[in-house]
Image 1 (cartoon, rainbow over the protein chains, first blue to last red):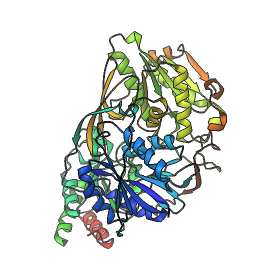
Image 2: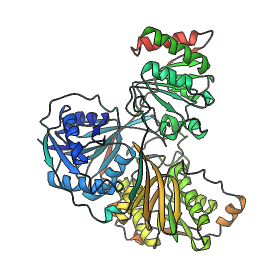
Image 3: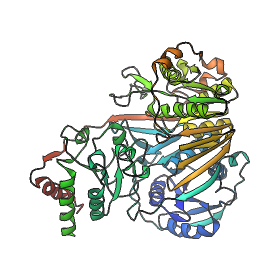
Image 4: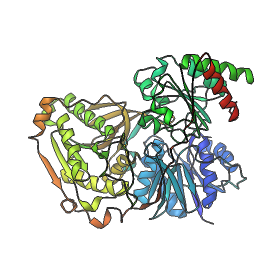
Amino acid sequence: MSEVLVLIDHVDGAVRKPTYELLTIARRLGEPSAVFIGPSDKAGDAVEAVKKYGAAKVYTVDDADIKGYLVAPKAEALQQLAEKTSPAAILISSSFEGKEIAGRLAIKLGSGLITDAVDVQEGPVTTQSVFAGNFTVQAKVTKGTPIIAVKPNAAAPEEAAGAGDVEEFTATISDSAKKAQIVASQPRKATGRPELTEAAIVVSGGRGTGGDFTPIENLADALGAAVGASRAAVDSGWIPHTFQIGQTGKTVSPQLYIASGISGAIQHRAGMQTSKTIVAVNKDEEAPIFELVDFGIVGDLNTVLPAVTEEVNKRK
Amino acid sequence: MNIVVCVKYVPDATADRRFESDNTVDREGVDGLLSELDEYAVEQALQIKEKAENPDDVKVTALCVGPEKGVDAVRKALQMGADEGVHVTDEAIAGSDAVATSLVLAKAVEKIGSADVVLCGMSSTDGSMSVVPAMLAERLDLPQVTLASVIESQGDQVRIKRDGDVATEVIGATMPLVLSVTDQSGEARYPSFKGIMAAKKKPLETYALGDLGVDAGDVGLAAAWTEVTETTERPPRTAGEIVKDEDGSGATALTEFLASKKFI
């Protein structure tokens, strides 16, 4: 059976949830071989984690020569690994960095590339949601090894016992790939809430909050949700850009998305259009967001959200 | 110093975008314009120029690969303050994927010559792939300094703040390089009346594939390395229930809804 390379998305060996989704998808296409690019002494943790989601093999690439430089070395390492293994497909998380790695890899391997896939089935055939959710598109790669960048929440991770046979791989990184230096790196502060792109529930605030996100945060905590924001809120300086959902921020696809005080401009919709259930609370009954919702309340979020929060907490 | 800013001519994102029968994007039925995210790239190019020791020694060239009407994107960049424009247009390019687009852009950059900075937006507002800047770096064998929210340049050194997925990074490189900037990098200026008038006299070159030494067989729909097999218009979400909040009725209704969907 053909190998499917899955690039492990991790922070210092701690594997992130989207990787398990990629492994689950990989099993539809062939035999998953996870690829760990990171410090050798953290590889063990990652191997144990991906074994549980079906990784038959794990290639470990020590990143001593790689970690100080932006994107290019990872693309080179993956290219060399792909040339050695001739995989049926290569799956990468559709984060900004993941897409850059995928883009460079496509040119290196002479292979087609599909980004932001919300589903991947046997073929591989991908599904994407485009034009602010108005169209879904099916596509396939027609040249070379399909390189597919997959969005978080594209699949429910399914546990499966994998052999997890470890094979160390040494990549030769060119001087060319070392010209963009990572001079400094500040890890994101843990918010204590679920990671925005991986959360099952997201509660978002916009201009209508007037700068006070407390009702949003309280409801999020009651629901065990992540907090998000519209561009208006970020541009007003009420909340950092890492919380922005939309075309120029993060894209989310949770089970439940609650938009509060958000009008629903197209740039925002691009970031949450594939959410399974969409709820909105807004004072303005003409707000475009109401065209998208499964349920909407025309009302003041400062009244509605706290009352809902109280109810939710009562029912726990 | 030479800065080449790549600008894309895209269908208006707020309009009703659709597909043609060959699964390519309908460019006829929708007005086009300079992609909003590329305005930030033009802005940063102008800022690098203005902050340089000798701004007169910095030339900003706006480059667009696109349909005939794409010249409008170049003109807008000239109106904002770019010094020269280059428009690459050729019927053979229609339907190109990102791989082919990056090929034509790279060849155009080489044709323009001596680029110290190839500047791009973070993503197009139609394809939204965010891969072309990285692909350009790959093709031109230049360092990729991408997704910058803050840009500092001094001499031939560029440093950026990049809001990565799990960390905020500072990336540094020496020119020549490929730089892409996000919408957080600073508001893009509106063309002034003076700028609009001045733009009319600025040099604007038009090239076809032959001028760049690109084979028509390497670009366009038939040459694409991916294929869209089906496009489906999503049925408008069956109108959801909208409740007007009166004396707490909203909260009650919402709670019931969440409970009915087993979220609580």
